[in-house]
Amino acid sequence: MAEDLSIQIGTKKEQYESLIPQIKGLLEGEEDIVANMANMAAALWQQFRWFWVGFYIVRKDQLVLGPFQGPIACTRISKGRGVCGTAWEKAETLVVPDVEAFPGHIACSSLSRSEIVVPIIKDEYVVAILDIDSENLDTFDETDKHYLEQIVALLHF
Ligand code: SME
Image (cartoon, rainbow, N blue to C red; front, top):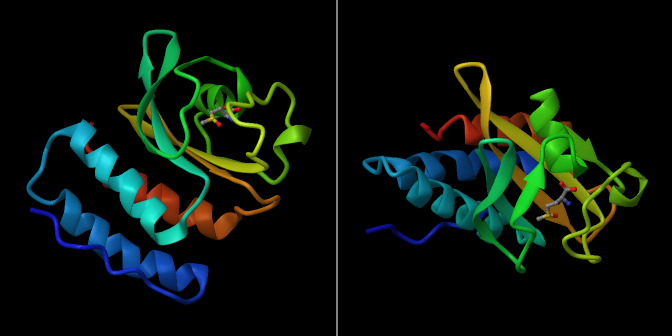
């Protein structure tokens, strides 16, 4: 049984520093990847209240929508398409300060203005991506990249 998340007020760094041990606790003793992705998305959303937080899972040649928090979203994204498909193809985190300036951005919602996509790599292959969207421009930076890469590394595919 999960305990309530303790929400931290402070700098972004302080918020992540407090959240990481809590996410570790949430995942401890549970090996199901869907359950763990679901609680990770919820914990990130509860702390930061971003517009959309969730996962897309690699299935053959597409990304397929996984556990998320936020409005309904596109279910399938091809490799190289949009921010998510590009992060998958490049196998690297993409920070996009203005989604309208990103060539081929897929607008699941017109309210999304900036985005970060973090690939999750197992045995040298991207197995899923974490996608976070914000209603504000320029929400994500190197601090988010640093901590979100640590957070997704807690998932064991
Ligand atoms: N904007 C993303 C698509 C996914 S949704 O925003 C949830 C992209 O360009 O990859």
